[in-house]
Image 1 (cartoon, rainbow, N blue to C red):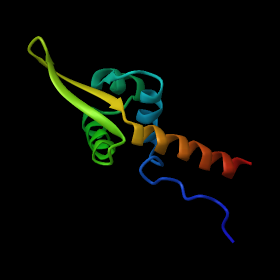
Image 2 (cartoon, rainbow, N blue to C red; image 1 turned 90 degrees about the vertical axis):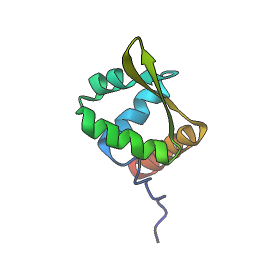
Image 3 (cartoon, rainbow, N blue to C red; image 1 turned 180 degrees about the vertical axis):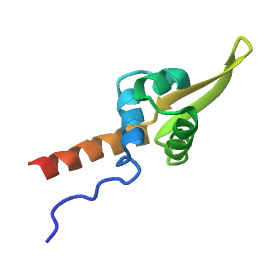
Image 4 (cartoon, rainbow, N blue to C red; image 1 turned 120 degrees about the vertical axis):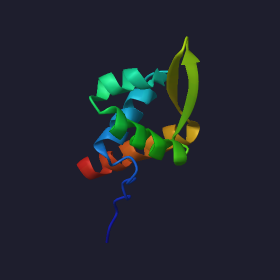
Length: 95
């Protein structure tokens, strides 16, 4: 019998988990900051952010800083709940 909760496949990706972990600790973060912190390529990061956004785990805001495009990411309530459930599920595996 399996007593373990299934791990959220969306959060089980190393990069998506890194993005979510980062966003849990800040009000919001700019794309460039997330890219620097995760070491991801811009292309890969865009794809992963898009997946998290489509799942409503994060909110993506596109604007301009002067003439440069600015993408800002913020975790949603859905994302916070999913992240906390994921962490709790992991703890069950560890214990």
